Length: 264
Image 1 (cartoon, rainbow, N blue to C red):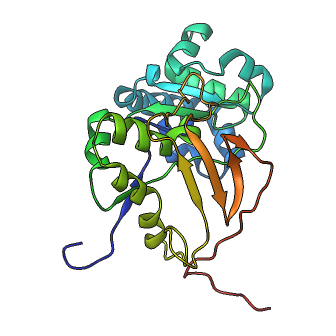
Image 2: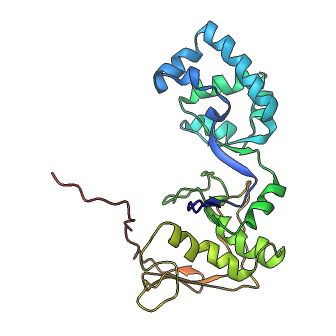
Image 3: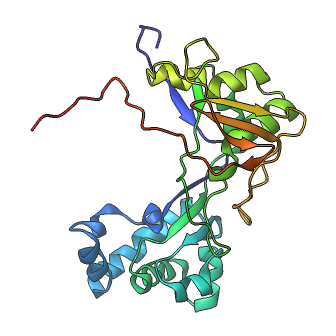
């Protein structure tokens, strides 16, 4: 950066990451694809080595801090959805490393998890870095049921910037919070006519109640919408009115500077 390189970063506002149980499983056992990985874990010699490797990983990432939130098999979800690896190990009368291997085999999937592995202190330090913007690192979910689990960042990451970290804790001003959520990332991505309230720009506008904007999603109940978001306009069309969705979907695919039209 000191020499002029355009280096920026982004972050979400929680102390937990999300990936599969693969996060504590070495890559050597996964070589050859999913089927080869599952078959290899059933073999005595690789399994013995794998147990030792996972045990080392769990020394750094305790099983009590790995929350399971996504299963392929409904029966597995009924038993273990929302449980930690440590809790599942007790339920199964196994060691945590045995539990991880056998549950992956039984579910025939990587099993989506939340890892409590980051420092709240570091989160606050990063929020104040001027060249760092915010993201959610989450999916956009079209079918949400009471049995669905995900990371609360999907519903609360941006809201926490405005409410918790700007208004309540004063880590950055509200103006800076808005810049890091709009104009700054739009500029980083070289998105034309986006990210600012300017004449001739696309009217992507959020109107919120600064005093009441609050994230409600938690790790236990992640499917909670925020309070205080009064109106949202996408390309000039109202999508949220008085905190209710209008049923319209005016979004469009945006091409960045790296787009190249292919010809046959």
